Amino acid sequence: QVQLVESGGGLGQPGGSLRLTCAASGSIFRIDDMGWYRQAPGQQRGLVAVISSGGNTHYANSVKGRFTISRDNAKNTVYLQMNSLKPEDTADYYCNANGVAGTWSPFTTWGQGTQVTVSS
Image (cartoon, rainbow, N blue to C red; front, side, top):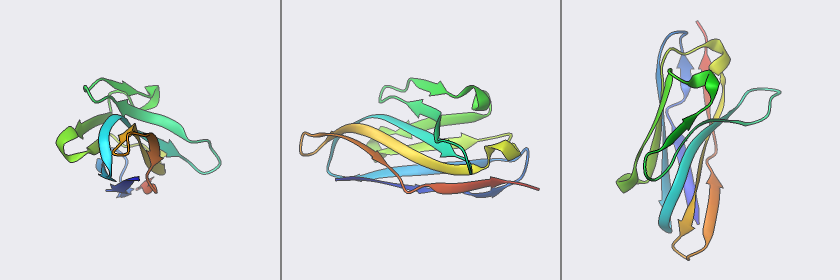
């Protein structure tokens, strides 16, 4: 099994920054895409940013120019640098990864989520 563990959430001020980290562990042969999603109260979970194993990135329009996704393939870790935070960024943030497990089976897995609150 492949597990994802997020860290780095918490309280941020408007205009401030936070950095989220997500580390994958377990029986992993290859990780393809890694991404961040978020879900605000009463809303559906939606894509924030995704990065391929080759470093190609895609962002939601609402975070373009403010958030940066990156990854360290050697560490099976993905990061989300969040700058110029806005109150509307408040949500639970979830890490997602897909690839091939050590059992040669494809996997898609989610982290447990980390809460981000943007407030003065």
